[in-house]
Length: 316
Ligand code: SF4
Ligand code: MG
Image (tube, rainbow, N blue to C red; front, side, top):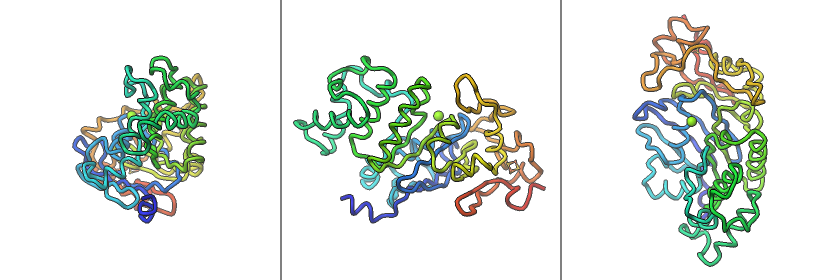
């Protein structure tokens, strides 16, 4: 089964256009097997929406999402259902998705039994192995979600995602709700799991310090569009898009010990009614007349891509 899947291209490409609310209107990029791609942008830029589209949790009205060469855009097709199992999502707040009346053993094991990855009889051993993988004492599997700390609950959420043997994890602010000291532990866990289980990640975070630490490559979104793609080191050393430059120029939020970007000049416009042309033009210090009417194209140059007229003939 794996062989057949591996015959397909080992990439996931997301090309999503004009969703119903235009939360994402132009986002084209690929994630290679084994890679960690960071997805960044201010809240409201569409990164969560894009993550949910890729995970099959939100419909895509225009565009295509492929997983290992298979079109999984329509989550209802058989091909998509099979592929979707290999794509799991990990949310910010695991508590909201952990049934408070179920024991962790059942929470973690139920989908694996349903999909035939283990049997009802062997489920407890199967779950114990997952608990160990995520750094929890297997005997805790008999407890209920409320008996765990926030960090432990996130580990349970991760164990549940791993139970169906995914290859690709979409982490949407998966550590944002945790104490800073716990965040580092969970990031380490993600990195260990990546190595041990050969996982690929789309790591969505508002925290640039975390992204710089964990991602191989970064995709920057602004109001539903991808504006820059670059290997992590290159992005942080030399951002090319004025929006990325503004993000990285933000004063570090010292009390949290992390770089965040709450303070770019000007309000982020509503994604429901974005400015014409380059969506960033009302806030861009380098904007020219062309920026107000014409949307810049995402132009690739080696491993980097930028969507800015400065990079494509100028702003005049
Ligand atoms: Fe700024 Fe114009 Fe480039 Fe948009 S296209 S980022 S407004 S210079
Ligand atoms: Mg979000």
